[in-house]
Length: 228
Image (cartoon, rainbow, N blue to C red):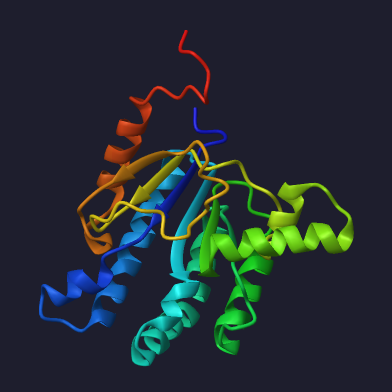
């Protein structure tokens, strides 16, 4: 039943999770990696088609340099490990967002991950890094103007540095208690169902994903039509 289901998650609350435990913010990011692994495992089990995770927004460059550096180190270290997991589970891993501002170590890890998993036919796992939906929309419009190609989906895919289009978002989950999109997948969330939870991302796992999916199945999606 999930052949085309696209779930997107704003993984929020790592820093607050750490602060409430008297830990540095980076400890929250390390704890969040465990949640990421568990959620991906359950997404595979539930046969979700596409899972897009908001890992680092373009606005996150404004955070303290020490935190940004730590995040980039985590990404550079975790991407190869996640690549091995993806290969074992037939997952295709791809990264959307700008690449020109990422450290070379992260960029090389991205290229390695995408090349090694490009033949995966199961879950399509996408990580949004240095990502801004507004920036992508502007870039897509500029691409159409420069190339004379009126296919906006193709232009947006190009703007994301993605290799293929994906279905629109069906379910948008945000952890951490905030209730906003924060410049994430604005175009693709036109008819998404939103699910907000106060749980911080390090406390969100497979069981919580199942709760969100159950709530989603109770929604009546009309896409502007009159219910039958």
